[in-house]
Length: 172
Image 1 (cartoon, rainbow, N blue to C red):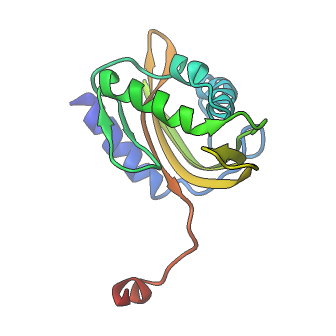
Image 2: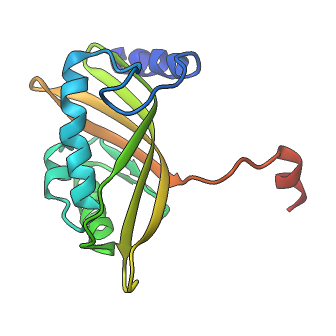
């Protein structure tokens, strides 16, 4: 129940916190331990975008309540389902020297829970593409402290699209 209340509070905070920029610049990431963790997590993201999920998985919770709503659709819940999804998704990427550029839009930490909302940009090679191409995702991460270390417990990512007026969506 405590986690549900914390997540509800974080959701409310998401709507009022405002915007920020990358780690190290003026931003809303005020928790020192989260601020120290994020560059390591970003390195795992870069390695993932080059086909190597090992560091990413080191930063992920291995518990039954972890979830992913990935950019390639569907969702998984629980480490036994999430881990193969990470392996599958990382295998879609080919080594290209991709480096994740993370723009933090918002973040919040309270006790053992935190979230970040960000835009991830990188130039990546996917599948049999002969050359790398730009990829921009809008991403929400939820983290939990486990044994004193931040761990990813939820990722939701999908391609960033331009704004669409509600009227245009209804006409399609």
